[in-house]
Image (tube, rainbow, N blue to C red; front, side, top):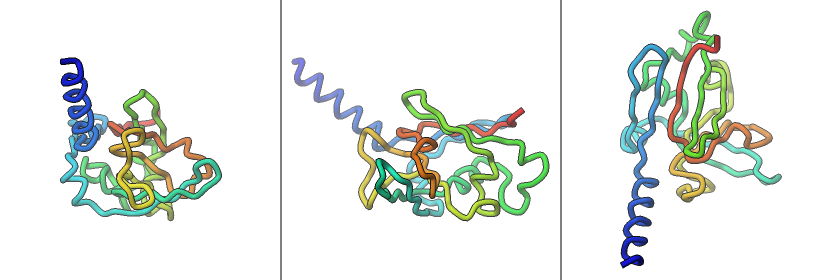
Amino acid sequence: MRLLLALAFTALLATSVAAQDLKVTVAGRDTVTLAPKDLAALPRAKATIKVKGADVTYEGVRLDAVLAQAGVVHGERLMGRYLNQVVIARAADGFFSVLSLAETDPVYRANPVVVADTVNGHKLDEREGPYRLVVDGDLRPSRAPRQLTSIEVKPAF
């Protein structure tokens, strides 16, 4: 009986990891929940970071495209008061990283920031996935939370 319960729990956990939605909250607006099929329809990019001295290439949806789905100002309109905003990427274990909104937009940054779902051509495993935020070109993976669950955009002060 215990074995059956353990197998059922493992299957449920694997299903939830594989098909997780991503919540995007913008201050003063409703939260947008993006299902895996919604994310699959957005533009993709590759991002490379150093992990233990080796280059690791992640691929996924561009973060600026995810934020645009939630109504965040982007592109040529991203100026003035909008530059005061920060993006907080939260992981399942409570870890989070913070980027300025400008750091997420191709108008201000040459290297992409991606919500990755693959690493070196393979799906992210349970330890990393289903999503990981990756800032292309970072020399350390300090701003790359694993098991990304939500993204929040709000004024810095």
